[in-house]
Length: 59
Length: 229
Image (cartoon, rainbow over all chains, first blue to last red; front, side):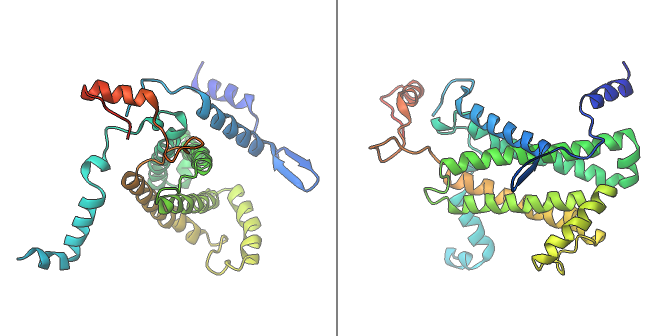
């Protein structure tokens, strides 16, 4: 598969060529993309707290 | 020339201050306290790594220009690299901020470390905003025309005119990178000076207890009784 084909398939997975999707509840409105990023940050933050760090402890 | 005369010179005062506050062993340490053994302490360094990619890709973009980054395949790649490294910079920086906020990292005379980090974060938002204004496409025009109303309402439109492309480009590629870069350097030097903030002590304790594992490691290294500091 050439670079163009691979790029095309990757681009087809997430089509960005349209207006953004928004989640709207009363006064609160956020784009789905921003919400996904915020949720991802929370997930990574929690993982960083609880996933053991490799290697031995040192002082 | 006497020692007293040397201290009058600013160069001597700067040197003595640097030697006192940032000795080489503290500036480039090869050991860290035991509590740093956690993923949450990695995100400051990850932010700096992402910032390095932002700077490198930004320099490349500035060498080639907008026609290149909009039309050639390499230009589009470097343009995307610049965008995604900036996204990761904020991603890592926000997790770093959350971690430091919940451990109250301003404790132990570290207030300026917290302040320089916070101001660097705010300056980074300005850098990202002017970056969106410098794309040279319809998105940047849309963002500029939308942003001007808010900035004019805030009373800063005369100083920060988002419709002035030349001003926004210069702010993005010169002023803001210098400010953010200088703040990051100050931030890191303050971390080196004061050390990484320890976690909160357990209830009933005055200081954070580094625990038995740290004692074991010190005993192994020194061969003596050892102890956690």
